[in-house]
Image (cartoon, rainbow, N blue to C red; front, side, top):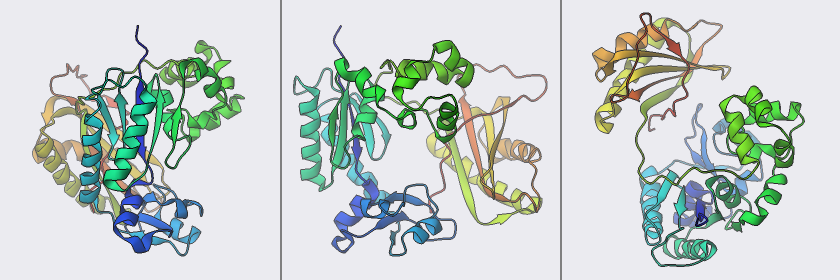
Length: 367
């Protein structure tokens, strides 16, 4: 069986790099792309800003405290999309097996590639050179036999890096990894692992599959396989939408139920607009609420009918909201709504409403 050859390409500080390219006066300065508002967050930070501790998803106000000289640039998503399309045109010269993860990163399966180049590292090097020549931007790339290792490798020598993890050296590479670099290991999971005495890939591989499943559920089996360099996931070039959602962060925390209900109504209208645009229809409605202390909850309800219109969604959304404790002591920072459970998927509806916890990739409203 032919060993798979997977490349992960990740653009370096993509949004900030585009801004520095188009505005030469920003070169060498600490730049954050985001909205300079009370509730604004950093989309991307330049490497100059990262030296001060500024990073993506950080509140803008925090970033400004860390780096008083920070230059904040409003995002230009239409430009980022145009540049991303240029980069994908380059990818398609080598393979059509491309799985985009976002505007600035993607997996490529080059096991069988259009130019017939034998070594994946040569393809990765050529792609990086062409991106630089055509867009003026730097990209980092990771090459390996599976997605898990290719993604980690692309981050290994940033910026403008190229790292190859050969099958024969995969376990050696994994052994030195800190567990928080392993896909699926977030902050809380990493803390849990540390309490178990797991700090590196080598520590993780010493744990039995049974023990990991007991501690982490289904993800325990994934961690067990990753620690052994096993990741059979294919590069998926045709993506099927699983949900449609939206969320909004308020300029100020709100605690009056009537005010939250008004905002919920506007969120429903935005969700309906996105449903109409995407053509997606589902049977599960999920409400997401984030409080002022950043505690977050979701409440969902699955029905036997499809959520399409305001009249379908609003009554159920209000029903979900009534299950949430909102008060002066527990004000709300953000609300979101999402629809999932494709219309063609079979559904079993309980006699009474069945509450389930879901993790939908909620999409913020464009500023």
